[in-house]
Length: 201
Ligand code: MN
Figure 1 (tube, rainbow, N blue to C red):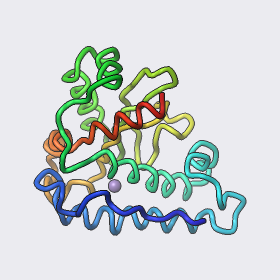
Figure 2 (cartoon, rainbow, N blue to C red; figure 1 turned 120 degrees about the horizontal axis):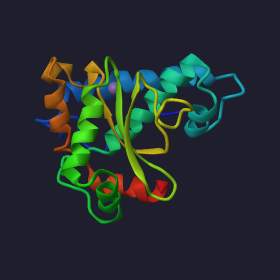
Figure 3 (cartoon, rainbow, N blue to C red; figure 1 turned 45 degrees about the vertical axis):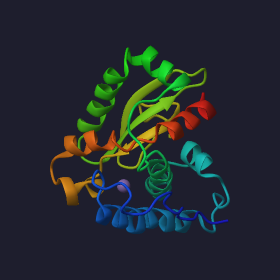
């Protein structure tokens, strides 16, 4: 079964004004679609065909095409799901407790996550990850790497990810990556992140 581009969980214009419609159209319809088809091309006819995306990312990233396109496929799947037109605010429950325990407060978490996103030189991602037992950490990775890959300096299961490739924000924000990062906090779907936290801890 080949990997398929998932439908967005909302319309292309649903995250306006924080994420603009044209960026969503190109980002999902061209970039994410491209990673998906190139991932299928990279595994087709090999012993990797039919393996789960998690297996590919954990065990087969010595293959550059699988690393870049498998990462791109997985990372964007997560990215669309952790945003919502009804997002923003702060987490509650176990996730809020884990964030407070790790960072001191939600505001301190926001600063750490924003710094990880702002200081990633070039293209990459900022992550909030959960480790077995429930501890959370913030980290960042270059390119389409992610915490499921070995030896990326970042571990656990990603439960929140922010794409800081220029293709994610340049049409609307140009060089103003910090404004894009701030805007992302207005659309974070904390109830979805909490589901990932519960599943991953
Ligand atoms: Mn992207």
